[in-house]
Every structure is written in structure tokens, then in C-alpha cells.
Length: 127
View 1: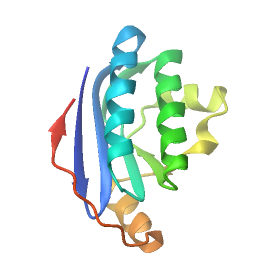
View 2 (view 1 turned 90 degrees about the horizontal axis):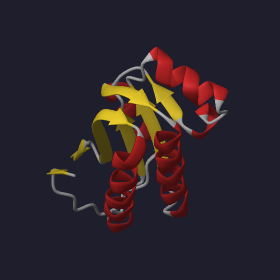
View 3 (view 1 turned 30 degrees about the horizontal axis):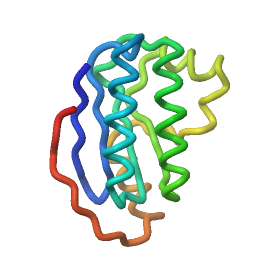
């Protein structure tokens, strides 16, 4: 599982690729938490465009990411969530933890309207 992390318009964008299932998720969770703790981002956006499957481990990773974001007083949003994953979020009652946006541009615009100014230093990387 590879995840690209990039910065656009002051928003950290996480782009996981593949299946958010099993042992791949625990590795991703650790690397993601370390990256998020090191950043000063006020807003985090997770793009599910390239995620085609998720299980309870993936849900746990989302909860962990949300917890880190809350600890850092950041806001978190999601985009491009396919129907099966959206249903999983609804059935697990986790859907209310995340703001859902139709597009990346809409999410960045909404976050920038709310965002305080934070100094940010993040290089594009792949986990």
C-alpha cells in the first residue's frame, strides 16, 4: 500500500492507493501518524479515489487519523469515496467524524475559509 502525501492550498492531502485491509493498514497507520504529528496542518483531506476496498483495519486507521487530527486541533475531510466504502462508514457510524466534499477544489476552498494561518513545511512524499 502506497500513500502519497502532498500539500495544496494549505491543506495536507493523503492519497492512499489500493486496499485498506489487513496488515498493510498497520504499517500505513504508523507512517501516517508520524507524518501527521510532524506537520502543523490545520486541515487534512483524504482522497479515496484509488482505494477500492476497506475492512475494519482500514476503519481503525481512519479513526486513528481522526484522533491525531483532533489532538492537533485540525479538521479532516474525505473525497472520492466509492459507494461500498461510504456504506461501510455509514454502517459503522463513523461518517459523522469526517466532512465529505464532492471535489478536492471544494474541500480546499471550504477549509481555507475556516483555516487559521499556520506555518507549514511539508514535502511531497510517498509512504
